[in-house]
Length: 606
Image 1: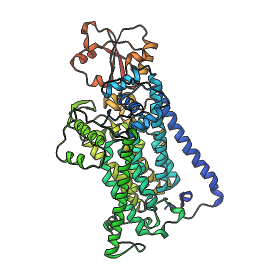
Image 2: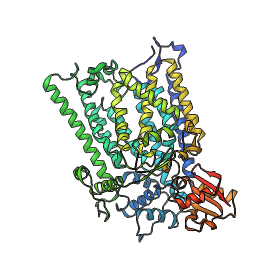
Image 3: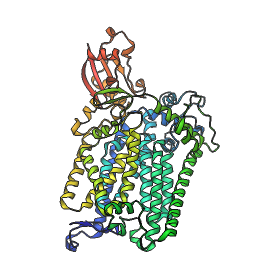
Image 4: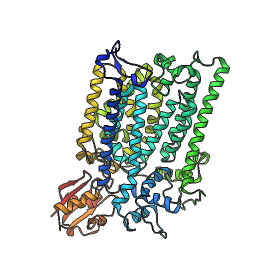
């Protein structure tokens, strides 16, 4: 049976029985060069996809709010806008906006939606230029997180696994979509993965990696509050990493293994019920570690100290994000702050975060108490469905990626030497997905973007099976993913896989940020100018953009007499699915003649 050599990174190559003869193997420097070239090629492909997408898409619904808030952060140092999200993600956006030099009237007074519109369309700024510079830092960060995916997988299963994980990450339509937008989902998910990776490395050098893991966890929490449910799991992982380091002792982790592949003691792997108990940290101490009751007390003490230190660093990072905006931390709670009761109120009160953060949690809980509309497989409904996110992921994930996710998760559990990594790679996304499934907003897979980020690492573990056919199947599935992703270029946002008809059919099954998030207003302007010049246009647009800013001059058919609505009827696909009786009657007597970006349909009404 083929296996992977544990230990040094540059020797984690598949062998069968004995090592291949030297004349049949490339020199080590050539293998390293090929590895680097493959990494560069994958990241370059992803960069081209994201930049192309960014320059062609108009602002999505959430982006103007984040952009306007980022401008206020840098110019007025005020926290008054968008309190439902912590400031770090918007500070990242602001790092690009400083090069765009957007103008904001000092006397502006309005809500956060009006703020975004004012910055982009009413202050003399070029919306295309502002949005590109706002999106650029997120694109750069997305590429850097690709290196984290690569490093994590490489440490588990070697260079081949690292490239497999990076390929799945780089070709993921959802990661490309949200990595090219000035939004918060990719930064939050990437910071969380970085924290987990550093916790894994803390099994070897906890003093070095635990503070870094705490900083990455704090960055995730300072970007999106939806990362909070993962905190107890990550603190437990921190304690287990410290416990492993103390039990293993310095002699078991030589310089060549530092932070490397699954360690030799774990290579034998636990088996059976008692093995899994030992894996989770409740078995007897190893020979290298302390033994007896006092030894256990010391191990628990060190683990608790490690978890506490990680938590303190995370809390400090959250505070630092707020103080970076306003060192005086001036804050006035919004007048319409929703009330919170019961366990939620207790949670808000006990968290050691700044008051604006905790009030932002109250806003989020208010959103959760509201009733939202959803759309799934052609059904429009009020409220939420617990299975919405798994179903949406099934539609919007490449088929080859789904297969590799399942096989990789199975490998993490089935291959003994990989089992120590299973809690790190699988439990955080599973917990966050379960929490998100209980939410009230069925608005898109972006609420579960951590799934493709984490499971790219899990999928790489397929190569640990070591058989030639497994490697061949893995390569074929990665190629299938690449072809599916490239075929949808540059329409990544409305992507769906081949089993559900591709991007042109996504609107039949999903809506909102899965398909139609206001991103195609610019493409619509080009289409009307090129194909339908001088025709009367009626428009129902779902988005944050201002049509007239892109040269679209249209009337709203819902405010006119139906007998007067003739010519081109242009409707966002989400508005089609959620049409009221008046719009539905107009659509019933119109003929679809064109499609823009798989998110807007053009009808002709005689």
